[in-house]
Image 1 (cartoon, rainbow, N blue to C red):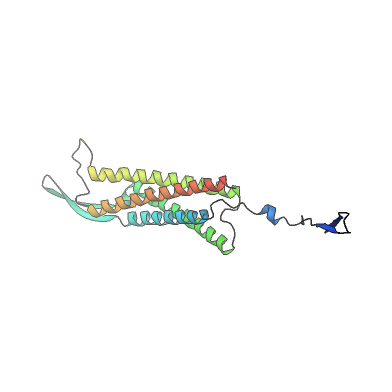
Image 2: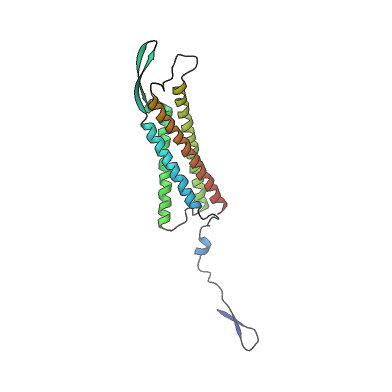
Length: 204
């Protein structure tokens, strides 16, 4: 505390200089303008995780036996997701995306226990943005490849005698369609997470 006389009746005016040794205030991560942005980020990742798990579970359960009559001849059919490379790709990408979302949620929960910010630096925000973009495009790619196979099973091949396989195998086609829909929803929520990452970057 320093003191400066003002020349009147010996009174003094105190001037306090703040301590400069505490660097925690300067090094504290920036807080975004939207206080609930962290909650929205956790929610989008949680939904993306649920959709990816559902996509994988539904596709793995897509198995059915049936029969098809062509020119009076009954042909036995057996449909399994593992017979198609595109459907296997969807299952694999759904599993990897679910693992990614789960890892991010566990990291967020660990930070919440320590009462630390969800995004602590710009480098971490860029890392989240890159990961969300990669897995969003990967889920879109896997869903598109599987949708092409599902559409082929439902409509058959033009200019050939190949019939609609979804008539004798309705359960397989319905589960495949539901799995593909969940994959696209997971892609949408991962893309939403990428948008939230951009907001974090703009506020730091």
